[in-house]
Length: 168
Image (cartoon, rainbow, N blue to C red; front, side, top):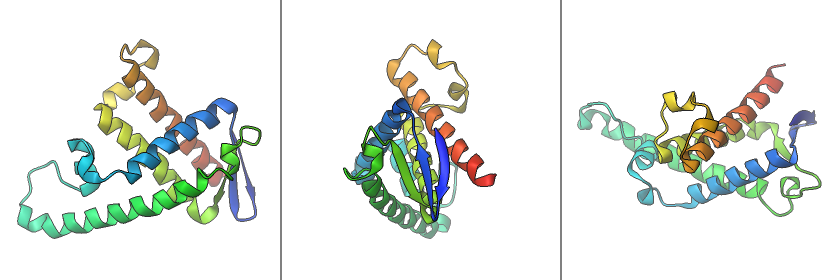
């Protein structure tokens, strides 16, 4: 992976395997954003609707939860639009001979948030704990869990590279 700037854009050039992994993650995230929250498994639904896991007085936080839910739904909609652009057939990311993603600098924060949304979604769907994230993926017997952990690590690697580039 190589990152460079061109005017008001960040250009991320991917190796073929990185490109395939990112495309797979982004297409899965697109499906996730298109799905109605009511269809989500309980932990994922609670995350997107802002339900709190600790004991609180419902009357005190009801309005806050409604605001958080509305905000998160709006974010999902905005991020879906970006994803659709980045995943369009015309986009260079979809072309194996090009394999790069152009991100407007104004959209970089959203890109990093998209990656984090996918990481959180994977962790919640698979019930992955912080302790499990430290496990050696080669020693995990469950293929689904192993793949999820690999994907989370890859997306974190991509986030770290972008942030590191931007801070230099």
